[in-house]
Length: 162
Image 1 (spheres, rainbow, N blue to C red):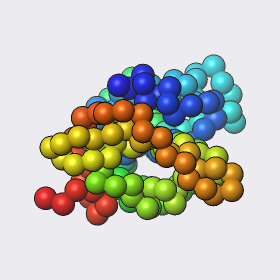
Image 2: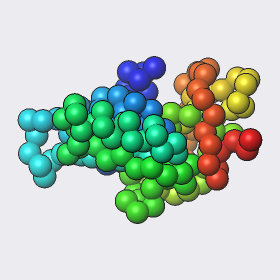
Image 3: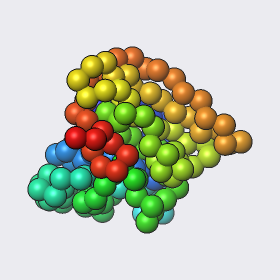
Image 4: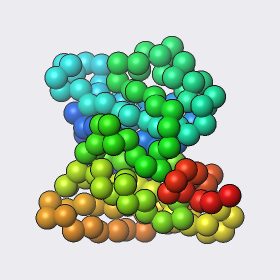
């Protein structure tokens, strides 16, 4: 699924990417390999900001990222990813690794013109679909259903209610 999502994101060197739902940090590292390859100059390198709502998972991911040598290309944040990361707003790409009941407006607002967002949308226990959103240069939003998926529920202010 990580490979499929990375391809659908249309990643390029130099992009600023927001990931919601850090998990182990592995997906963020795969994104960093594309947008910030080691052989590129510092000025050309992109960066991944990944937000995890569960503190212990965020700490584990931070340790993984640093120990594997991605600390200069990936920043792990403990927080409510359903709100995005407004401190570093305006992302080229946003990827959400948890199913949302709908598309959170704060995330859409933090996507640059010309940007791409991937997000699983659907119920906690039933069908979910992977949606690719393209925010066109004129601000229009285009949605594309990439097929059925199964993800953990997105929690936080704009996620599923418990």
